[in-house]
Length: 328
Ligand code: RAM
Image (tube, rainbow, N blue to C red; front, side, top):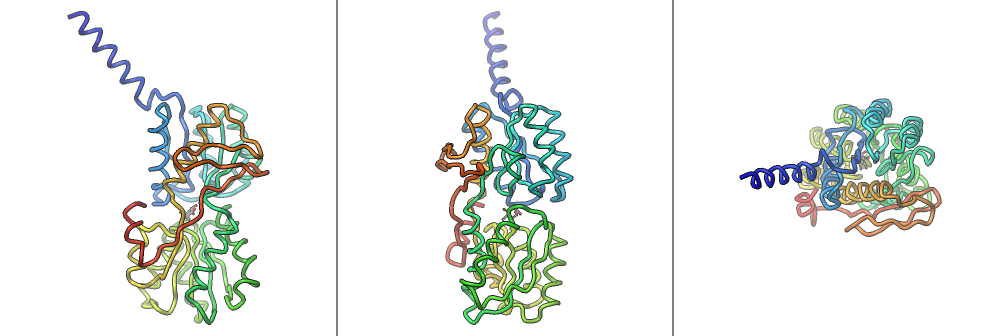
């Protein structure tokens, strides 16, 4: 009887030790804002990485609105909790630097992923794909369906978002030479907020009567723009394109508000971010030229700013969006 009790107690302790509360490594996945399906998909991959690693707990967190100020509060709370690593998709490249430097001074490993922090505020940064390639892709997505050219506008996320700003800059850089008949008339910001994005899309349509395409390099903005085009009976007149999560966007390929969009695999991105944060906790060095494993996704080599890119984006259209909408 005594032996049975002892056995039961030992099993209970073992179960406790194996539970996330007793995980040895706690990695915070900090997103631009909660309630964004893109980040929920990334979290899926992050949890998958934690399960694969076994002794890792992923804390999925972020503010309700996509602002740097709100993210600073989240980071301060994580410092107080003494997490082992912070992996952040930042709403601003510079504003978060002091808070993240405090985290690093306290021994917390810091990486950015998706949307970067300036090099002094993190140890490494994981881009989803090559920035120049994404910039060119979002323009090409519009140009492919505008053989005669015409007016296009960009509906972005926050005006300070590192990733969108880098893609827009890259897009503008290829316009004159590669897409001379595409006329970019405006860039507006919807803050990855559905209501603001909707208002901004309506504003573009009202201000530019000859608008032929809205390019939204944000999964939140692209849905808002496609809904406005649908509601205003502009399908066939304005093509909505950009970066979209197939599960959220399929309806707008189906109804013709969009011909095609692109995105990388957000599940793989969250998974890779956790793999990299964990590698740093385990003592791997983030230095230019270092090659780090991202588990089942492969490996990345850091450039001279300690940045790397995961994989090329996929394009989704009527031929394949159904299949991908089942996955993310
Ligand atoms: C939104 C966010 C995210 C971006 C995607 C494409 O969900 O702005 O940072 O990578 O769109």
